[in-house]
Length: 202
Image (cartoon, rainbow, N blue to C red; front, side, top):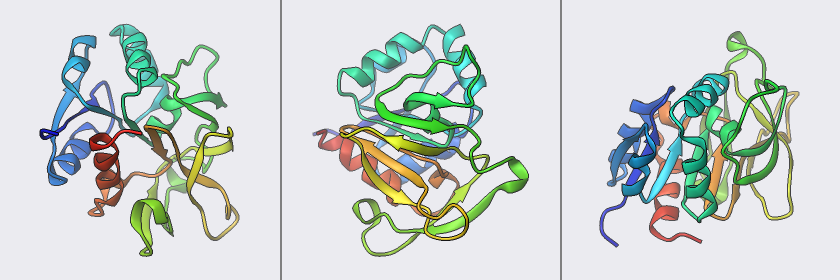
């Protein structure tokens, strides 16, 4: 396969950080703002940001149906934080008119870990992504996964504190998501895992 091009949905959020991380992983990145931008990408990242704002902008730019078509057609997709919300089939505590791209048979609760002041970091083990070494995960107004469908694999859970056992990383086929923000750390393992998924889709 030639060098993949991975698009980053560039409506709002951590677009620059994801693009820098992807390029550090040896692939090309591209901003995806309008439907035509999807034509040239092999995978898609939906960044962290503010999910209701992202949803409203996706409506305004006519992006939802093209994004859904990409994902339903088997296009690899990864969402971090707000991106997890955008890729979930069902949301709790969302606005009544809030739309999602879907692709993950999960129920996600928005802002489940609390407000900005409740942001925190934690070490997580995600063997499929990172092997035996823990990852330092950064949670900022983060969602969590309340429940998963039968075809969804849980990749990581919170390991300590009052939220121990909470699901914070999932994958279903070519679609994956994390509650946390690997794009704002120096750890490339989540993005490297996604790049491998793009190179060899399931």
